[in-house]
Length: 403
Image 1: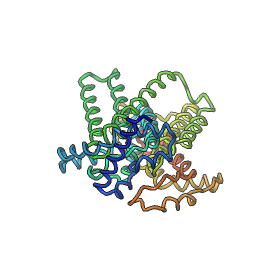
Image 2: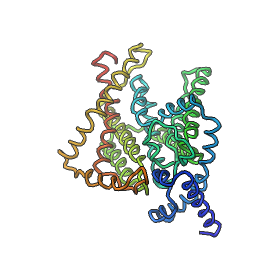
Image 3: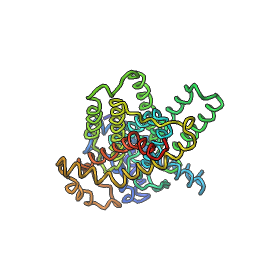
Image 4: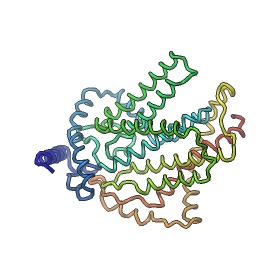
């Protein structure tokens, strides 16, 4: 490291220490990423640590900028608006909303969104845990959120920004190249997409949850995942997964491989849980599509033009089915399968006591890894959601005369 780099690193550390002293070091250390450089140097490879040190130059002064922005623009109405619209990038929002196009007869767009969102969440989560960069410091910044869970994650890249970018580009693509929409309708829909994007992305700054580096790196992740999805669809446009017995096994093996080889963060960070959930959804989608193609099942839902207003009753049945699987059936069924029938070792008890060693309100604990049985269980629980959406719900719609 050069003398100049050393001086800059020391200045970064000094700046962090000054802010910690001003606002209470114990409180700041409760959030991941705020420890001095030596804390991370001892746990990282040389390349990983150097990249983190370089990026801290963009995060060390972000809190003052965000504080001044909040001080200038905050109002009670805006607080409510951005707090609640931030839920459009939340875990549960996607569980409930993503299946709806499938039930209205637009299966392809949900498939595209699942791949883009799934890998955006995984890649942004991987980079969060690789760099271990802090969120804007609070105080001085006020964090406006409905979910304390998200405040315990690292900062960059922003998964909200990644998701909004990937989904926004997908809708731009679909709308602009649509052959059925007129240009006035296209412009109206595109304006809604822009409004959604700006609300979700600017809201992360307004709410004190992310700085500019977080947003730009998140947008880059979302754009990469969008272009990879579009390129893959084009390259494999004639590929039929149902013709190949190996396809579902490869999909599950790949999903578990990238999850079990996820980078190990330094401090506790819950974003890996979202990665497990979304990769499980992607694999569940692959297996469901394979079954449909393999056995020629006709499970496509009809659209409004042929079925009328009753299509809008399908989400009532569909959402209920998804919630029943996720919150009532899945956990008992999956862990009974893994532990009682397949005899997987239940290592949850061995890890639990490690998470209780420190008071997390005082200082964020070092990462102690997620039990393997939990990774497998969460993976299968969320793989069951697309199975419910794509395979079971069309059957339920037939039974209730909604199809």
